[in-house]
Length: 436
Image (tube, rainbow, N blue to C red; front, side, top):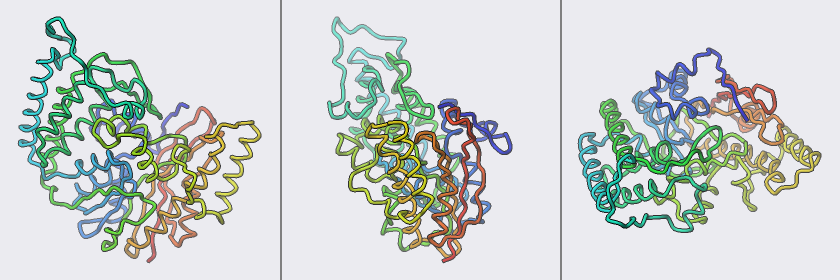
């Protein structure tokens, strides 16, 4: 499915330069949650240093970073362990950038020495003599390999990455390890692996080799430069907790949040766990299918690959006529088309579970909202299930109103033209207020 991105002011792509995004992240900008949108609602909600902001679907921490820059304390919830780890590093600005670089250079030097002794170099254009024998490349376990998209990473870059990780663990400094591993995670995905990204993750042209250590060290230095720029905000509180957003984290109960700015998953057939599978496995956050299952069970049920037999979130919307009618239409269309796969049979249930999970989330949230708290949820229309249009924002607003929230508006953020349905799919910001 191809999309053409449009915005109200026509200026979305120009902001790529404002956000200083590298080219390989452009697709993420036009399909995800940009910083300028967070800044808009920080200002609109009148949030300042005496308020607390929560992002219950925080991803890599865009909301938290923008809050921290503006001196606003914040908390994020994230169900994916490797993403939570990266977001925690991203909002830890207390690290000395010069010390970080010094340690990273020592790790890089040790890694390159090992590779050189094995007859390898970190520059794919130069390979030294190997004295008549080839090095035995390090590999993953069979359980780990089964978790990856096939050919996600070529053997030689994989070997180098494993050697680097071994040195990071062996020379570990607790002050820097999260930043160093986060830098590696980013380079693994965008520069070292064979992965490619559109709306979905897949495999592109295989790289026989890649300068793993060099790319990683460059990423660490970019991180250090960022730390220098934000030094004045380093003491602003920002925390990221590994938690399922559909339930309340008891540690948050003493807090009262004045603002929510977030972008939950949309109901579609995108398996969000696939986009982070490579770094999750290599950095040790996922060892086998049991770990994968545990991760998926913490997620909002937005696609068929996260649905389990004992899920019960649909009970939260069993009396919502619009959700039930939508699910019934999807099931009727499946029968009409004669679709019989296990995944297709789950489409109608996914819709009930998704909106039920959001209702459960909004109900739990009441316990930690300050009276008058303002909320912004970035959600998008979808047509993944037999091309039946799901007006996500409208339905979410209706559910919130049923739960006692005030709907203060639905802003159009941008629209995407779907070639499959020949319709404009709206991405909207559902604005709510909790009266208390």
